Amino acid sequence: MHAPDESSADPRRWWALAVIAIAQLMIVLDATIVNVALPSAQHDLGISDGNRQWVITAYTLAFGGLLLLGGRIGDLFGRKRTFTVGLIGFALASAIGGFAADPAMLFAARALQGGFGAVLAPSALSLLSNTFSDPRERATAFGIFGAIAGGGAAIGFIAGGLLTEYLDWRWCLFVNVPIAIGAALGAFYLLKRDHIDKGHRVRLDLPGALLGCGGLLAIVYGTSEASGRGWGDWLVLTALGLGLALLAVFVLVERRTRHALLPLHIVADRNRGGAALSVGLAVVGMFGLFLFLTYYLQAVKGYSPLKTGISYLPMTAAIIGSSTGIAARLMTRVPSRALIVPGLLLAAGGMAWLTQMKVDSSYLGMVLPAELLLGAGMGLVFMPSMSLATLGVSPHEVGAASATINSAQQVGGSIGTALLNTIAASVTTSYLATRDAHIALVAKQGQVHGFAVATGVAMGILIAAAVIAFLMVDHRPAPGEAEGESADATAQALA
Image 1: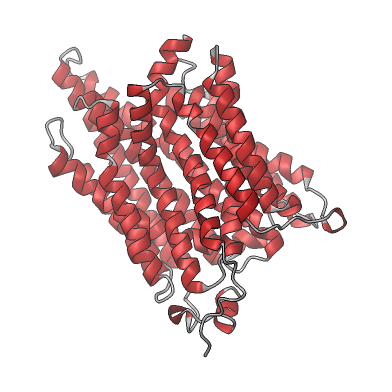
Image 2: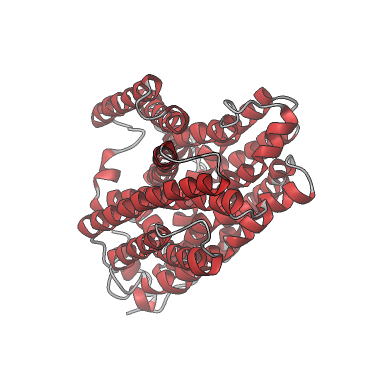
């Protein structure tokens, strides 16, 4: 048995982790920071109620639909290059959005942000996977990364509340500019060069790109429209049907393509497939919680945007503590499903607690316990799942594997928001149909009843995710990982 060999490790790897973590935090923050600023932006630019969703959906569509292509571009041209280009492009798109003079300019900027985010996110995870090969260091690095992925959204609510309340909604976009430029400079100096020369590049799978990205775009669009139109609307059904058809053809094409956009053996592996499903379904529940708690705290309890953001801090702390304090320490000692399955069940317990919410429920008695349970559970899920997503993947396919787990997150969040919002709205409508909705208390009771029923559905989804993870994920740490042995132990762990 050997002691860890530090000589071959990049001495700047922890600084590199800081750069990668900052970029990931910016991506995750952007998914929620704009939510808090949306009412102000809508009023300032004269955006109609029917079109205001596009401030969120334009970003989601571009990000979720282009992730597979973004991951493959990183594999072809080098992750450091695509990571840096993604950061600079994200800064440019954010500046355009901040200076938006009309709704169309803001929507276009948000779509551009999503496009560059789709290049940036897979490269970030790929660089992290390639930078840390020692099992113990890898566990720590992915613990930090998982905590950011899980807790960044809540931080976005706080940042959005602060910037909107004390500055202007435009600063929710401008704030990305110095962060992205600083991270790009750090990437240039700190990240290892992995440029692939022209003679060794493989051809880009354009048919796969069109089919895969088109299918994801159609599904994300359909689920986004479902929250306003309903799941039975012809446009929603057409978009979902087209998306599924395109993805079915995508699978057939990828099976016959030499240089596939998504090599099917990546998702066919039970651990990587199980991790992607676990994260996708977990995000369904998590986004549902953000959606309902935000409306519950602001519309029912009368919280300000800033106070609402601060109320998410305990959950953020629970995610970070669980991910870095528990999951990172145990990942090299116990089977991955021994972390993922209990994590999903803990999160389901948090949802079960919230099904009992009432109009007069207190924050300390109802919301706080649920946040702590959900946060602790998500911390156990995200870190090992993201590590499994790229574990054992050949270097030229790490981008595709990274894009797969990111796509699961994004599509899961989009579907979760649309599905649970539609359920809550229909339950509330049914509740108020037989009551006097003009009475303020009755209207709030109907709203909370809808939230509670939809939260129960989210609980069921998390339980289903736990069953899937138990049946699919069977990765066990290699002997010696807990002691941090490199060389042979590392090779076994990554085999």
